[in-house]
Length: 375
Image (cartoon, rainbow, N blue to C red; front, side):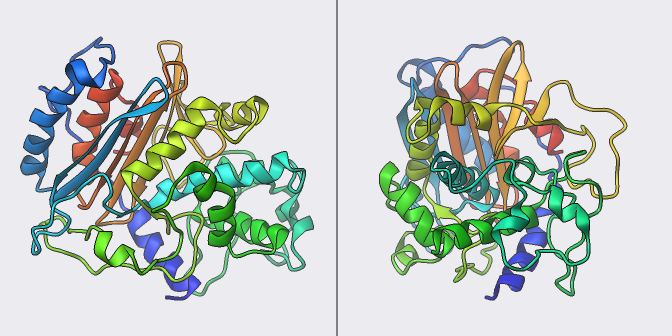
């Protein structure tokens, strides 16, 4: 699949609107604080996750729960593919979809620490050819602007492959995978390596993420889950041959939890760099995610975007989160730097986020406002 085809596929699935995310009453109880997984959370999850999956027709789910900066529980539920009957485990490979973006951000920030990339330097200075022709506003786009989704780019290019800037970069939020592709080209130019090679050397290997790749690996054939549509029918497996920073990561709950552990424990990045990643850059429009033609009527007081992460502020506490949506694959991650707790979930169904919300609420001990924004 060529790069344009890859983006076109992602444009369809990432732009899908998620509806009907219910609060499953046995899972969420108001004002509940996170329990240690061995005492309370895990037994509750083991009872309720299968019920949620059955209710919403989700074939398979892989989950990692993090406590005190370490993966405390890793488990698979259901089936990798309904026709084969093979069970999901913590080692099952899933499409991470947009959960590709926080991992890429981590790799970008390592280049910033090395002095090879400036967070606030116009990206035009790193590439010999402009990413967008004939628009001087391109000079305003920096790595910081890309990672906080303020480029003014659409989520993906037009059908003819062209990309336009719809508003002055920096002035507001509009979710854009295309911005990440722009920054990917810069990273590849700076490092002299294809993205997956750089990410393997700089991120996957140091963190022990042995089952993660932005391009398909032959060993994934035996490990991967298959996506399922809303009727629980298997969909065609996507095997990306070209890396896309925004959406092509294939990984496991185990591997992704290792990445979250690194963020929570300050591994691989200096405290000042992590602070940049975790500081709100822009408040979100409660009514809009892809907002190239829509100025916000109001801004959220609870939801923001930092560098590569969504930030949810509630009761004086900030947690980081991101969702993934490649159509028949869904994912969600949330992490609390204060308690060093978190959850990673991958699901092989179009209905996956309907299961994700009550599970995330149970693990994190809070009603997750991010799902309201994803409505």
